[in-house]
Image: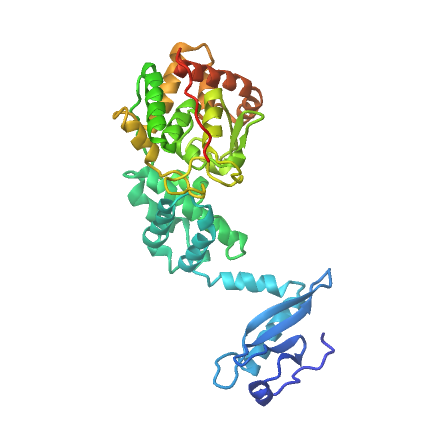
Length: 419
């Protein structure tokens, strides 16, 4: 490259030339002009990657033209000289430019773009609202700061006012900020320790008491009657929400896990429902792992009744009231309202408590099996991995026993398949 003639273009040529294509100034610097009435003009630097010889292109910025702002020829040559210095040191100028650009990237705009990129994966509009609240309101002090300049003390200033009063919200805020900085690091826009990393913040924050929320539960002896009432309402009104409520009781899962259940997650041959890891992230298991739910006969009957013929794998099993094509999930509070119409004091989480009380009082199944059926964290990672491989059969036996208890001596009401 050093032997190539430099400075082939003149300032006058750069400002007046209109022919589309790349016009060389020598030494890898080109003026690129696109075709069209309002053609874009820009400076690019062409070079070959060290080791592979692959041709690469680096944009240097817009080129100055008639009535158009941009880099002049002299300014472009200075930038090109800087690129040649980077190449002379054996470095990749494209990667170096990313790091340089990252030093000026501020938290606010980057966080806004990041939120847009993850919107398709968020579970609900409320989740989007929570993200926006954190990014725009709680993180307001760091929005104008460069990504590389945000420190752990900045994050502490955001979290400290919330930590002892609304601890759960503070923890969720911290987790979101950490994800944003992880993304920035992945894009090469910052380096060093993540300022929102829990390992760093933990010694600096006081230990907050987490008050356990007690969810109203029906005595398990009333669950069979409650289920019969759900079936009667379903038979009379043909409402999917009552079937969803019964399914949640039979499987002892969380409402959110059932609401977002998709057809492709069910294996009718193995009588198994596998909930993906991303939907199993909880306080007890923040990393999330796939969770297998053994399905009893009544649970299978509900699924066969409610899943429309020809439904694709991405269709929601329990669809919203107006979602005839099963493209939208059941409403967040729909199941709760269905249960309260029968038993006003109960909550959907309380149904899990009823199951746990029954398993402890009425069966001889080990405590660990009942806890695993509720997707509660048991033991260390090694023990959990071992139990995942050995306990499914026992959990299936437990859930079948629960289904028999609910059915008592009455016959299971037959359900007709959806059209």
